[in-house]
Length: 294
Ligand code: NAP
Image (cartoon, rainbow, N blue to C red; front, side, top):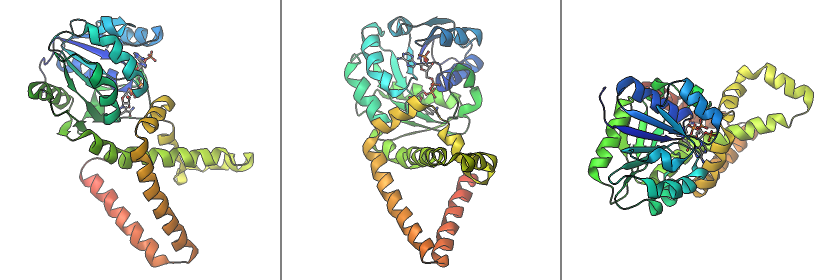
């Protein structure tokens, strides 16, 4: 679906997600003016070189001046400071949205700072890779993935519809849900798997040298898939765990109880229990493939 939805878009953060959205806008809405904001000169240089933006700046307030859409696409720990800096510069009627992975934290850090004449639509495009930075993005990243928007009770319906249209333009299926519910769902589907991957890869790096080299050599036996997940951006994932602490700890508690049960089944040679569990998990894998989310 092409067409211009916004005249001037400020992307605060032009990494994997921000630059992928910039590429969608370039493809489908070439008349939209894009302003990219990041801290480092090399990031802004890359944004220019890759033609991801018409203007670049390291000043969030300058970036949002005159924008009808502002998309915050930085790690969560930067939100409060960005909110403070952009608040006085936002145009009346502007829409502010974000792509952060923990929605209650995004609302906590941004909503109190934004002027009442601005519409805030928190969002999370559930699509990604383990790579970061402006070079890592691509327009097709969002295709056929889900985007979860977590509007507040007073979020303007028109603003919600426009942000929905933006992500639909990127090829996403858009749903709305309560922020806390989003954070519990993602704690299970995304955050817990990252905890597990970080732990397994961490355990492997603690092994004695000779064993470690064999682990890398024969990694195709399953370990390799965990290293991909554990290769994700350290700052982004630090922020996710610190900001979704309760939901992650809840899922981790359930996981460790199930792990103990599995450990017992292995210890007591309960093959039927193992087979029953692995049959159920295989069915889940098949349903993910059928839902085209593999
Ligand atoms: P990324 O590739 O590391 O990009 C982050 C961008 O933000 C960079 O351009 C960085 O440039 C800029 N930035 C960092 N701090 C800033 C600040 N204080 N002011 C202005 N710019 C700043 O990260 P990403 O993967 O796109 O993730 C961005 C957000 O999307 C995160 O909140 C994450 O939770 C969410 N998300 C990620 C994924 C995923 O799989 N990666 C999926 C869905 C949602 P400088 O370093 O030059 O400032």
